[in-house]
Length: 132
Length: 130
Image (cartoon, rainbow over all chains, first blue to last red):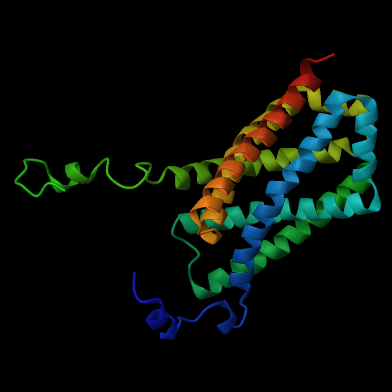
């Protein structure tokens, strides 16, 4: 290992806070954040299913929490995170084919991911309220 | 490494080496489960919409239908692999101390499998149970 004092005196390479936030880097970290949120969000899905498989009263309890205003807010976030992560994944598939790496293309894909996820979330909730 | 003359080609010698001997396994599985995840996620959203406003009996009827139960189970199988690999990458990126890292990696595996199996069990019970 190199001497730690000597190491600390060397200049560091530019890090996150040096750069002006770009849409591409925001969408990169948002893909990871939505993935993490969905990781724990699976608990909501499982709680609903397990309660339905347990008893009518357990179902009523979970159903009540999820249809409260706070529950709906969480479900709104959950649905957006899911759809955003899905579109982000499709963006990664485009990159996996070797396409979409140009500066304009990267910017377009980043904006399209966000716009698409918001549009799809609105669509899902409009349908959900329409069929209710 | 043995530096004496060998009849093996360099490629033959390097095969089977490397830290984990799994190469691109995670990369490939993450893409495979992501690909499966796209149609399965669309089905899950559609099922969720179909469940809006349903009481316990009606919800059970929806989930236990084979055309719902089967994709929901497939979703859990694909997702538990995908979420485990995804969270493993995050842990390995941010947790560098060996003890906490190994502990979190173990918890990640337990959590992913527990969530997946709980979901699958619930769907099976709703389908076959009393």
